[in-house]
Length: 165
Image 1 (cartoon, one colour):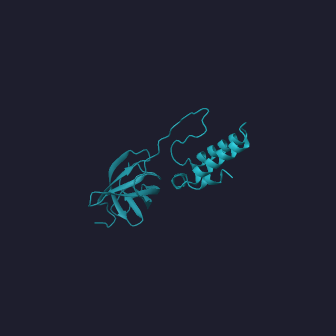
Image 2 (image 1 turned 45 degrees about the vertical axis):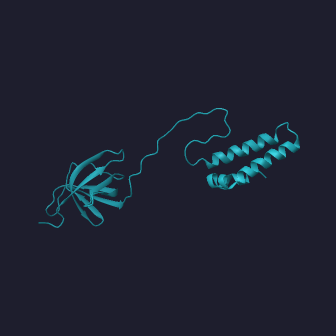
Image 3 (image 1 turned 120 degrees about the vertical axis):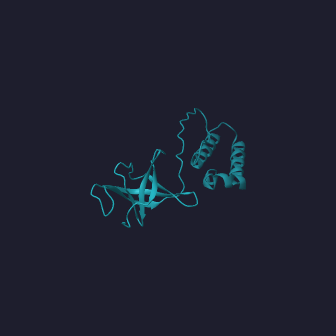
């Protein structure tokens, strides 16, 4: 009996989330040998190995090479190079949203810059308004106080703090 003879099962999670297999496999250090010439595996996929505790060990495929010549005790097979993977990362949904005429809107994640731009626009609109200079200064002062409030800073960071001078 060869020490490379596949004695475990592996499933392959495709990039689109589909899981194929199981395939007979051997987890040998930095290489996974999949002893099935019809296996469906390529770079970017994740090889799943069921652990005794019931959880899946995840190995992200960096290279999958097919060998039609067998090695001792194994026929045609794939040799898979991998890096250890963490939890499955769900793909963020894509949203298309059209908004007309709005100055302070936040949708989704990572929009701190959009908030800062909205405050910049607001300050410019105040400065170009027909309001008396005293009212303009008071309005900008109120915006500055808002942007310095600890709760606001905690939410949007210091990014918007330099908006009002």
